[in-house]
Image (cartoon, rainbow, N blue to C red; front, top):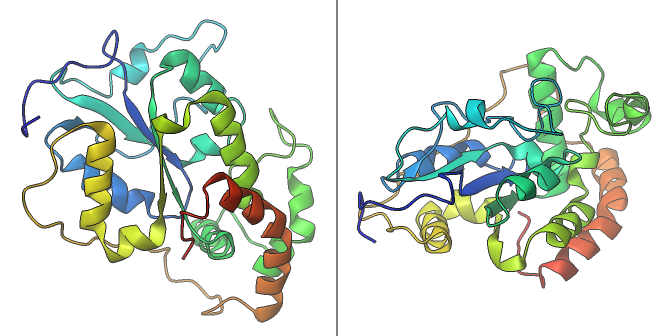
Length: 259
């Protein structure tokens, strides 16, 4: 397909692809890259947060009009990027009910670095006030009684969002492997052109004709925290993530570098 060519949309003109995870792995830069491709239409603002919406959508009889209002060009393939979809309960089930042929792009990062970056972001926003060391240990108890899903939290899930093995296994229970593209954040950072080419091939659209200018995701605001992780925190998290990473690498045939 040539760039700009008329492309039939998904059945009933539905969203055809999602960048569904993981948070703090370069999804903002990836959203910006994809927004520049002429065959794709993405919303003006990243993170539609439709399939994780517990307040405005009646999931017994969902109305997709508000979601579709984010798009307007039927000649292009519609897609969006909301990283919480891989992690949030029922989001993938809702996506499958909406479009069983949905193509899913998941980009992964070392879970220890991801947790640290996540905490820095929330601390900068003022949503987190506790130290990182406490937040990944005793602070996990804050999630126990949260509604509507005890054990899941949008802010304090520094550790839990790094349980890639169980999250990917769940996705594979719902969608065929050929509908997923699994990427590493390090490759996107080092060679964005090759990564975008892979995505274009996966989505069946024209590849860019010119060079891809590297982008850097917007960093968290400058705040008063140590420049690096402590060795104790790194070791603690590595032990927590060990079983999950073994499962993840088994599911991906060790094809994803988490650097």
